[in-house]
Image 1 (tube, helix red, strand yellow):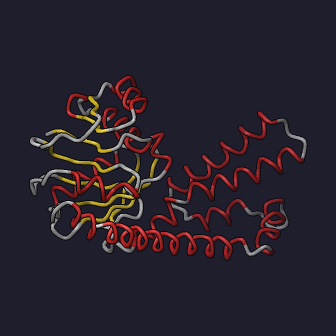
Image 2 (image 1 turned 60 degrees about the vertical axis):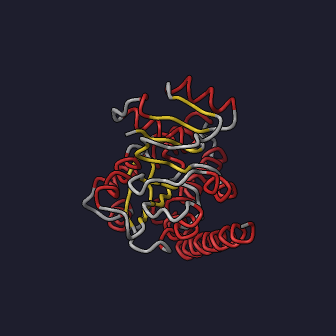
Length: 275
């Protein structure tokens, strides 16, 4: 059965690329995308079929991936024809909760909500997944497989936990990029050339992440191992601790989660008022 993407932006393109890399036939994938240039790029890059509007019927569709911007989701969902209950719907629109989405889809309940992140563009993403109670184990595994085509995927049992997922992995790359920016600026200020500074910073961050993922040591244990008493790392960490880095990061992530909840409330409210 085919996979149809509604919306062909960066995340949809990343998912298509991951699926193709994992053996999915391009003839089984199609995209509904109103922007002609985006449609052309998808055809040229992946060889998938594209359409300017959703077909009046979606017969034979196994999976429908909703990848439009959140503010357009209600109008798009209302415009779709009624879906057979065995059609798997996967929404990757940030902030759109499953209850209103089910209502907009005329009572469809076979819905999984996914929260991927930017590194999915290079198949190194980390996604959170939540399924409506009516979703079968088989369909949950299918959604999980689709998201794992571009990285890792974890399930949450409460939809509200996706706000925390947003704060951890959705916004998380920005925290790391900010750290990289600061390290690069400091490296330049100490006289390192741009190319050397960039290589050292990027490979240090990548290597640290790979080492932490390899286990068995926790990040805290690894930090202790690299911090010799009276050494250079201890001197650096003393400055970071004095600046309350851990508390600042915690406050930042709680702010991101709170904003995610606010945006979700606003999107549901706006869509309700428009109907």
